[in-house]
Amino acid sequence: MIKDIQQAGRRSGLLLLLILGANTLQAQVNGEEKLGAWYMYFGMNQVAERWSIHTEAQFRFYETTDSFNQMLLRTGANYHISDEAIATFGYAYIDTDPTFEGDEALLNKITEHRIFQQFILKNTVSRFAFEHRYRLEQRFLNFDGPTETQHRARYRLQVTYPLGDTFFLNWYDEVFLNLQGNIFGQNRLYLALGAKLSPTLSVQAGYLKNHFSTAHYDRLQLGVFFNPDLRRKQATP
Image (cartoon, rainbow, N blue to C red):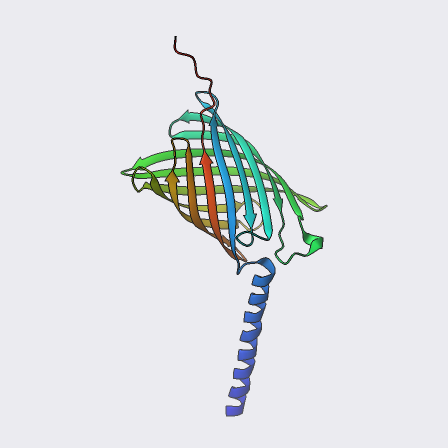
């Protein structure tokens, strides 16, 4: 009896080691255990009283300065319904390397053309500024030959709190829902310290926890936000 218990214990221990080893190997393959970084630029360029142009570029890495993961370029036309409501129609191009280990056969495997529709609502409670962002995406993916069309919905709740005239805290949580297949896509939880350098320029440095159904990534984020007014100024007579 005691011998059987000992054998069962050894088998359980071996099974546990195999599971832990498989999880460790998976983390090594997809870079899950690495601290990566996203370097980002966002712009809202005012061109008319109710119209602005969204510009955006993001460069994402599996490690802080190495192991390319993704390049995202996005633009769109914003219609300012009011100071608290903005509707956007836009386009994005995304180039993704889904591998971390550097297998040459899989590098730059996924390219994507994306169309999106977006609606933003803003409100304030005391000193807290809330932003609700609703987005629909139509994704046209090319997996280095095979193609696929996917649809996705996203919702982001963002809260900003000022720490004086210059510095502020920014937090958001965003959920991604697939409109085909498994409904859960990913969830992004973000916290950053920001600084307003001028009326049109601000920067943020923060941390992002990116959860997928099969992986979890930790990412540093450095962002530049530039919102110039490009309307032609009329000369004063």
